[in-house]
Amino acid sequence: MSNSQIIIRLILSVVLSGFIGLERQVHRRAAGLRTHILVSIGSTLIMLTSLYIFDIYKDKAPVDPARIAAGVITGIGFLGAGTIIRYGEEIRGLTTAASLWVVAALGLSVGCGFYVAAIATTVLVLLALLFLRRVESKIFGKPC
Image (cartoon, rainbow, N blue to C red):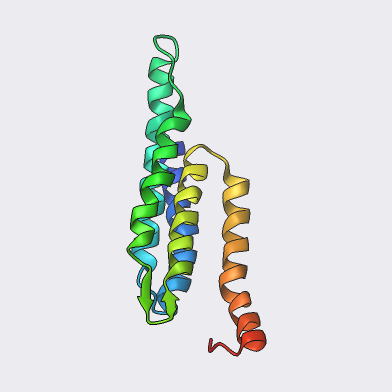
């Protein structure tokens, strides 16, 4: 993989996760723009590192680049759990925790070059975050 491909993947990771993080920031959630970008770019770097390790050792030892990526998905649960807060009967932060999990997956997909899926996922997540909020408001009477 060339240096320019690496840089493009890191930048795309920042841009895609930035859109999601910006939506969270606008709605004043615990994890906003910077947190989402950091989670995604970290995931991208981990995937790039996994691919790099695979490339170095593919003829010397059995290496599975997906094993390191699986650790990201497990580890992100701890960060997401930190955004979930209980207020009496109400639980807040689940959507933000889920969005952090998604940007971790976005980072992994961008890191391995799965651009179409990453871009489509970003669009779908933004649609869910932006438009389903209004639908919930109308159906369940929740404030936007």
